[in-house]
Image (cartoon, rainbow, N blue to C red):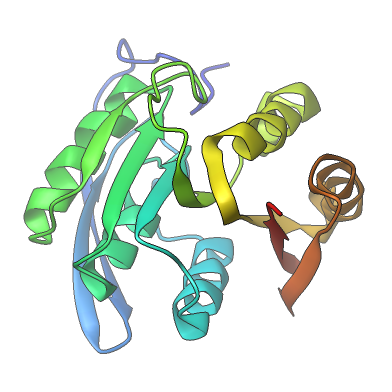
Length: 199
């Protein structure tokens, strides 16, 4: 099976345009076979964005881990153009789409391939955002949480969206073990938005 968190460039292309209206702005995204939520912007992403951008607590250096074709990082950048936004994904097709979608929506982000943080150089991010690849398994998801701690500056935050039935409660426990804190900042239709702060 060809998962969206692998190198699946050999898959046949089936590009499609997704129109997504958020906060009075209509965004245009190109998706394709082999990327997460290829037919529409998933509900978890909508809840995540709404929660993140209403709080206005994010700092100036943001990393989107597992960016897919780019909606989270691109919309954050569009909302706060002065913030630096970096986006990474292990899937080369997703990264190419994220770059194309950034251009389509007239935002300047840095999108590149990375297996979690392997090709990430910064260690001073104010915020790390992730809609983690649940199908990749707990070992991958927990690695995203664990290594986020060392990539964040003091006072920085890890933000996660995860469904209750896909392990939200165990994610809270794991993040608490790593950070010493984990707040459930929002719940909507089974989706939990989690925030942990590095003190």
